[in-house]
Amino acid sequence: MEYNQQSKRVVGFALFIALSMGLLGAAQAAYWVDSKGEAVKNSFGECWKDRWPTDEMRPECGDRVADADGDGVADDMDKCPGTPAGAKVDADGCELDSDGDGVVDSKDRCPGTPKGAKVDRHGCQLEQDSDGDGVLDSKDKCPGTPRSAKVDRNGCELDSDGDGVVDSKDKCPGTSAGVKVDYKGCPEPVVLKGVNFENDSAVLKPKAKSILNDVAKSLKKRPDVKVTVAGHTDGRGSAEYNKMLSQRRADSVRKYLISAGVKASALKAKGFGEEQPVTTNDTSAGRAENRRVELRMQ
Image (cartoon, rainbow, N blue to C red; front, side):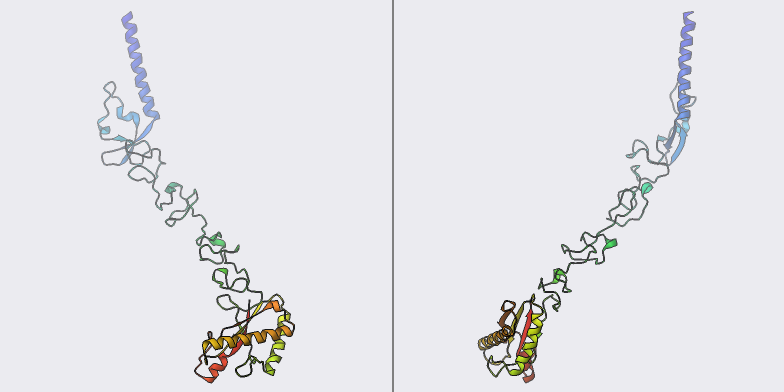
C-alpha cells in the first residue's frame, strides 16, 4: 500500500515537472544564435522536448546559444540586452547611431545630422548661433559678427553714435549726430576754401572774413558740436617755424569765429605745420592746397 502511494507521488511529481517544462516552452519563445552567427527563432522548450529526464538538448540545438532579443549577438556577449526587434546593432549588441549625434537610429527622426551639431532628444538639430552673438542663425540678419562684439536684437553690430561705422571699427566713438565721418568713424575735416592770410602772417584777408561769417552762422545753429580749427602750411621753411605759423593762423580763425558769435567753449585751435600734407609740395599748386585751414568736428 505504501509502495503504491509513493509510486503515485513520484509519477505525479514527474508529470508536474514535464508539464511545467512544456508550459514554459510554449510560453517563452526565444531567439538563438547558431554556429554561423545567424539569429534563429525557436521556443525554449523545443530544444529539450521529450528529453527528460536526461536533461540533454536535442541534437539540432547543440550549436545554438541564447539570444533573447534576437539581434544576432549572444546574450553572454550582448552589452545592450533588450534592443527592439529589427534594430541594427553593433558587435556589442547595441543599437547603431549612424550619424553619431547620441540618438540611436531607431529613435532618430532626423538621420544624417552634421557631425558635432547639437540635437534634441529626437536627434533633430537644435537652432544654432554660429557667430556666438546671442542671436540664433534663423533670426540673425548680420551673420559672422566678430566675437565679443555688441549686437542688437537682429544680430547686427551696434553703431552707438549713429555715424554709419560700427563700434568695433569706430576709432572716434561719440561723434555728434549728423557729422560726416571717414571709414574709421572719425569726422571728415571741412576745408575752409578761400580762408587765406597775408603772406607769412596770420592776418586774414577780407574775403576770408566773409567766408568765416557764413561758417559762424552754421556753427551757431549747432551749439552741441565741438570744433577744432586746424591750421596747415606747405613744406617750405623749417618745420618748427611752420608749426608756429599754423598755430597762429588757427588761433586767428578761432578768434574771428568767437567775435562772430560762436561760443568759445565750442572751439579749439591747433597748428599742424607741414605734418599733414594732402598733396605734393613740389609744385606751386600743391603747396597752395597744403596751405589750408580745416574745421574738425568732434
